[in-house]
Structures are given as structure tokens and as C-alpha cells.
Amino acid sequence: MSMSPLELPPNQPRQFYRGGAAIAALRQLAPGPDEYRPEDWVASTTALFGKDPEGLATLPDGRTLRDAVAADPVGWLGAEHVAAFGADPALLVKLLHAGQRLPVHCHPDNAFAARHLGCRHGKTEAWVVLDTDSDTADTPDPTVYIGLRDGADEDTVRHWVSTQDSEGMLAALNPVRVAAGDTVLVPAGLPHAIGAGVFVVEVQQAADMSVLLEWRDFVPGPDTAHLGLGYATALACVDHTAWPPERIATLLRHTAGDPGPVVDLFGADADPFFRAQRLHPGTGLDLAPSYAVLVALTGTGTLRTGRGETLHLRRGSTVVVPHAAGPTTLTGADLVVVRCQPPPPGPASAAADATRGEGR
Image (cartoon, rainbow, N blue to C red; front, top):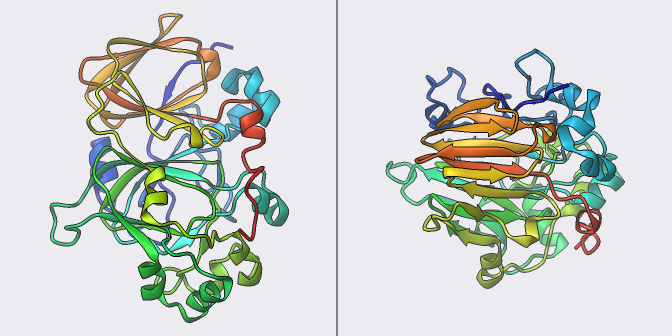
């Protein structure tokens, strides 16, 4: 069956924190009435933790993308990917606009997720900063918070959680001011929070698993904050090691000034988990066959397959590209696109967590 790139509508499951207006503005839509829809799960085959089927993307023919991939995994993902990962894109892409600071939290790695949650994927993630609300009085200094600057022992982390010492948790993290064009890689286990006003494309492993170290004023109680494991188990996924500023710097990139046709956004450390590039196609950029998720940031253009099928793109378009679409050509003088892909099948992906484990 012929498979073509497909444009997807918004997919915004309800969350526990408030969002802003940036997703609607990017998509050129009127803001919705519910401010608790701060994320758009693009081409998602991943459901919200404990709330399946919420979060699954729906195709124009009414099927979920998850069902479509299950029916034709090789067509959607390619034979090499299926050999490595099965009928699983191994990728989740979101638009996220924080209308308030997110709680301090972290995510399990592959080993912890497999052992305690029966899930193949942990949740390493990365952020492509699209914009910030730095011109408003509420968010004059848009900031993300990443990694324990001086480290912390298990007793200290348990004390923060049991007393809900938000001030202590936040003070222990590295505050990093961000601007459009910055990217941040967040390895599984690293405590982190996104500050109010920050708008990102979030690229991550295909899992929805968060351990909230800070739950008060966000969720009804601690029982909804530890993945049903209890904190005695869940806190074993926390990276307690020291992440001083010079170590944090290895996770950051400042790409705003790079006008190249293909800009690698995260670097080789992210490759075992996912890949992403910012594309400036100009008069034409040829792309090899691959399952991919595209987010158009600015401009207009076209995505053309080798069979002559053409999909018109504009600012805010989100597109899923099946592997069977074959080679494609992206064109647009003012078009800028973020292209997200799964990890390449191979030894690096299989051994992604060989040096990671719970209780770091």
C-alpha cells in the first residue's frame, strides 16, 4: 500500500499544570478554553501513564497511529528499525509551553523502567527552545533547572520529598537561562524543571513516566507522584551525582546562529535515544527514507515524495512521515522545520543504558 506523509491535528491531553498560548499561536488557532492542556503530543503512539488511550495521535482516517503502525510496522518504520525495536517508533515528540513552573521531577532510565514498570523505554528527553515569554512581567528571566549542582545523598533527597521542601530542591538545581535556539539534553534520572514561559519542542523516548519529587500544589497527593511504586522504590531512579555548571554545559547547545541547511540539535550523546535536526531547506533539501516527525516553525514550503506526492507545509504544521514514503525533498525559501527521528538501529541503541542503572 502506498504510504504518504500525513499532516496531523493538535493532540493535547489534559495535564496537571497550566500552559500558555504559544501552541495555539504556532498552529495559528484560537486558544482553547482549558488552560490545562500545555502539551501537544505529535504523532504519539504513547498513552498517558495509566490512562490509555489518552495521548494517542489519530490519523485522518480515524485510526490511531499506534494501530496503523501495528498493522504495517515495516511500512511505517522500515525493516531495520522493526528488527531492532519491533512495531514501536521508539520516539515521542511534544510541543510544550509552560504557563507555570513545572515541579521538580525526574524520569526512570531503561534499566529501572524494565525492572519495575515492565517497560522497554525509560525517558531520556531533550528540549529545543522555540521561544520564551521573556518580554512579560511574569517571566522576565526564562529559566530551566537541571541536575543537582553539588550532588545530594539519598537521605537528603528523601527529606526534600517527605517535607515537600520546594525551596530546597529548586535551590539545589542549576538554573539555566534559555533563549530561542538553545537545546538541552536531559538524561534519565536528572532532577529538572521547566520554568514558566518556556516553549519547547520536547523530543524523548516513547514513555510517559515521571517521578515527582515536588508534588504539593501540583497533584492531589503523593500517591499520584511515584508511578505507583512508592517513594522507597521510585527515588532509586534519581541521579544523585554532582552536576556542576561545567558538567551541565555538556548538555547545552546554542544553535540560533547556525543557518546551515541541516543543524544537528543534540549531538552524539542523544543518538542512542533519538535524533533531531533543524532544517533550512531553501531551494531543495533531499531526505533519505526514514520514519520522522516534522514540526514547521516558520515560513511555508512543500514536502515532495519520489512518487510526486506533495504536502504543503506552513508555520505550525506537524507531519508524520512513514519510512515507505521513500526519499523526500523539502523545499521552502523561508521554511524552517525541526525533524525528529528514532535512534538508529544498531549496537549504540541496544546498549543505551549499559553504563546507566538505578541507584546512581
